[in-house]
Amino acid sequence: MAVWARDLLVSLAISAFIIIFLYQPVKVEGTSMMPGLEDQERIFVNKFVYRWEPIERGDIVVFRYPRDTSKSYIKRVIGLAGDRIRIENGQVYVNGHALDEDYVPSDYADARSYPEIVVPKNSYFVLGDHRSMSNDSRDFGTVNERYIYGKAVFGYWPMEKLGRLR
Image (cartoon, rainbow, N blue to C red):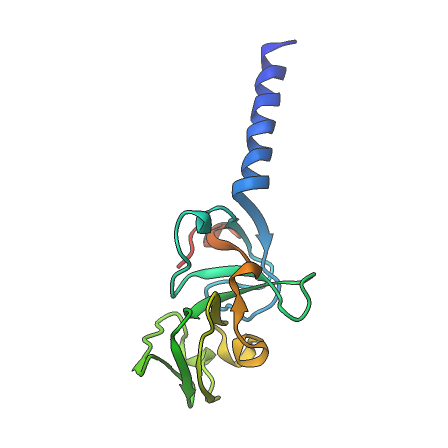
């Protein structure tokens, strides 16, 4: 076997391992995470990170939609297990303190309110950044951790969006 063929096979094997077990390319569908993530944008999801570190407030997670697990959603974690979450006229409160959300521009905010809940054990309260256009925990409730399969970490297409997600 030629050296280039061996190198190609090794490269393909390493790439397959990374895509299958570590990073998965994902196409964003919908506008619920604008302006940070736009419809049809391409990102990488780290499927392994939550085996080593906990899910944190502010993480952008990809999960199976609780009402139809054949669909995947992408949202931002707002509330962790045990947190008290309420929304008054669009302002999110976590454990009684107003949450500073610089990732939600005023054009994307809404004035909806949501009664206070306590996030159940092993669950998360998630919201889209485009609050007026998002189907999220305000609509379908909290997301059990077993449905979360990755953290959105890096945008790669279009090229002007190349870089780490925040």
